[in-house]
Length: 227
Ligand SMILES: Cc1cc2nc3c(=O)[nH]c(=O)nc-3n(C[C@H](O)[C@H](O)[C@H](O)COP(=O)(O)OP(=O)(O)OC[C@H]3O[C@@H](n4cnc5c(N)ncnc54)[C@H](O)[C@@H]3O)c2cc1C
Image 1 (cartoon, rainbow, N blue to C red):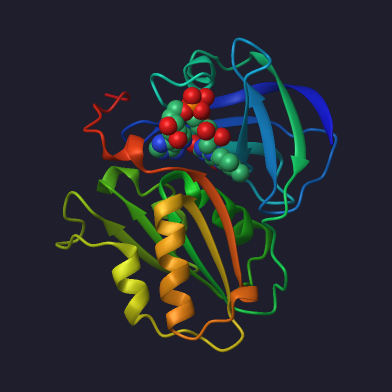
Image 2: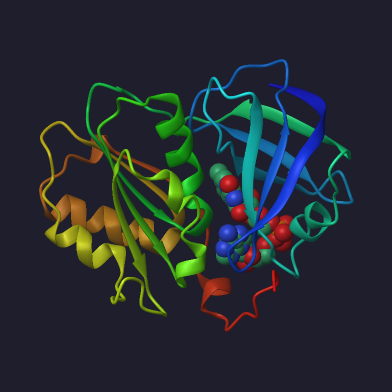
């Protein structure tokens, strides 16, 4: 793992309260699904972020949700294009075990990032993404999903005439032979999805998790900060 100071190339709002932070590519290589660490105004405040760009991409992208009372994301939000920020990485083991096998990826919110890295790094991967968000605007990267089986779920507002939760759909989904299951985002979704998969006969060793946060903050009626 190394630390580099990287220039911000793009910093754009996404959905109700998330941001795409695009940085120049560092000297190191990463594996799809790996993490970087970014810090707040106090360099001792360090947080993990999954790299959302592919292994061959020319930029290092992350998406982060702005948590107004958080220690790090308000500081990130204040950064501008051209600013230089310290980035530590890469690390983490939420990586693709076998690109020959189908992947069922369950993500909530910004938990879509490792899935995007998988898609961009392995264009031939047989990939099904179940993405759960609260509002349709938060279906990040929707326009990039044509090449995969994309199943979006919005819990608070109808999208294409429906509301729903990804865990309900997971109970009905046809599960391919030899699939690997990647679960990323809110802890509660991860516990529930794992329970469903095990009930449905999936072997625990084929399930991989990357928990980001507890849903407590999600349950608060938050005001969008990108409007
Ligand atoms: C392995 C790993 C990878 C991660 N990757 C990402 C990523 O790619 N993008 C990303 O946005 N976050 C990611 N996170 C969460 C991130 O590390 C920070 O916790 C988050 O950005 C909040 O940081 P903060 O210092 O602003 O707020 P904090 O002071 O750390 O947190 C304030 C509160 O917000 C809650 N919270 C944190 N993140 C979220 C969220 N996304 N939605 C709802 N509530 C939340 C926390 O549980 C806490 O209660 C990841 C976490 C882990 C453990």
